[in-house]
Amino acid sequence: MAAWSVTVHVSSLKHVPPHFLDQLGGRRENITLRVQGALHGASRETAPSSWGRGARAGEAFWPGAGGVLEWRFESEEALRRAERAAPVLKLYVYATRGGAGAEPNPRNSAALGTLSFQLSNL
Image 1 (cartoon, rainbow, N blue to C red):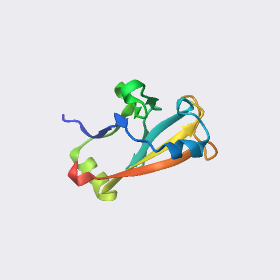
Image 2 (spheres, rainbow, N blue to C red):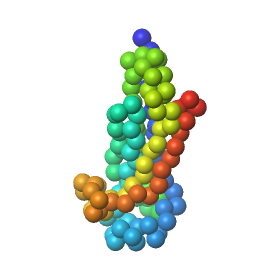
Image 3 (cartoon, rainbow, N blue to C red):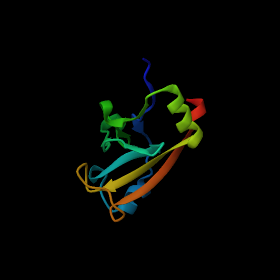
Image 4 (cartoon, one colour):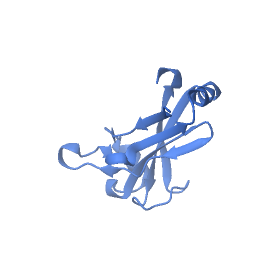
């Protein structure tokens, strides 16, 4: 039996605007980024990002499986139904002040942007 899934692997985000971090009122080391998406009523979210050092300074990255968003379906037909119900997968990128253990809420988080994918192209 074949496994049907939509998998997105977020590995890094480069060139995060410095003024964006200033708006949250924290140092880069105290701010984490997350990517979140929903497909067919199921929400997925990455682990909090880490920040690069040296040549990767200014780059948020997700090591290993921390950046994987995956939705599994029991059949190809179930995947196609989800695709018809929501043909565009939107991923939301947001930042949270307070470090990796902080619980995101409207007071400590801000949206950075969105990414949209046509499911029929995946």
